[in-house]
Structure formats: structure tokens, C-alpha cells
Image 1 (cartoon, rainbow, N blue to C red):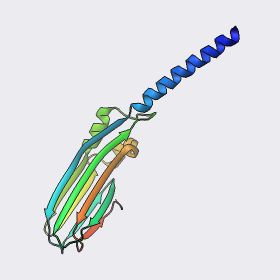
Image 2: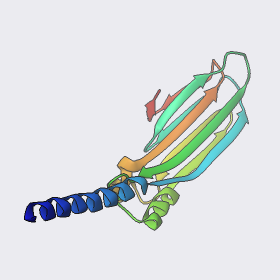
Image 3: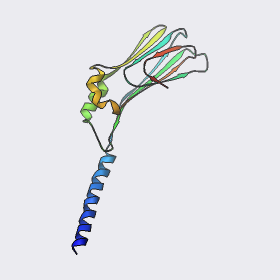
Image 4: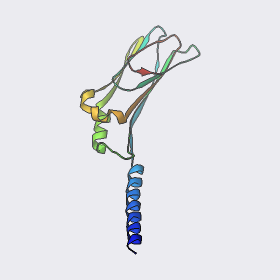
Length: 150
């Protein structure tokens, strides 16, 4: 009889632990700060300068001879599973601190993506932050980027 009680207690403990783990796995945080969409007409002799402190740059050259630049920038935080490193307020502050500036100086366009308080201030949260910069530019338009490019 004692053996059955131990087995039942072990099963109950296992089910409780499994239930808590399942709750933590499904409770993930996914916050998209905002998506920036911009469209500019440009002279094909200019250049697009991307100065990104963090993020991945994806560049697509348009096939036809158009003089338009399309810019899409998405800042997103994804975490959860078994570990949530910070509060939602901390995460929102981090996303707000990541500043995106787009400046036109014909024939050039400049995009700056950087933290106001510096990247080191937010180092504990960088592995959950993704910044995607998608660019569509005319075929002859030069793109200069310091970010990770696709």
C-alpha cells in the first residue's frame, strides 16, 4: 500500500510541475513597437545611407527604372517560453528608446537607428529585440549600410 501512495504522490507532483511549465511556455511576450513605412522619390544618382546600431537590413533593387525608395522598419520584442527577463514597462521603454530617424538631403537619404541612452544601457535585453529594415531602391541607387545585410 505504501508503494502505491508514493507512486500516486510522484504522479501528482509531476502533473503539477508539468502544468506550471505549460503555463510558462504559453505566456510569451511579443511586442511590436511600431512599423515605419516611408516612400520617397529620389534622383538615381544619390545614395541611401543606413547607420543601424542594431538590426538587419534587407535590400531589394527594383527592376524597372523608377526613382522611388520604399522603407519599412519594424521594431519587435519576442521573449517568453521559460524565461521573461524584464517587465513589459522595461521592454516598452527599451523600444521607445530605440530611435529611428529618416533624413532627406537630396539626392541622398539617410536612416539612423540608434538608442538614445546607448546600446550598453540595454545590453541585457538585446537578444530578444529584432529590428528589420526592408528597403526597395532603384537599380542604380547606391546603398551604404553598416548593418547586417541580406
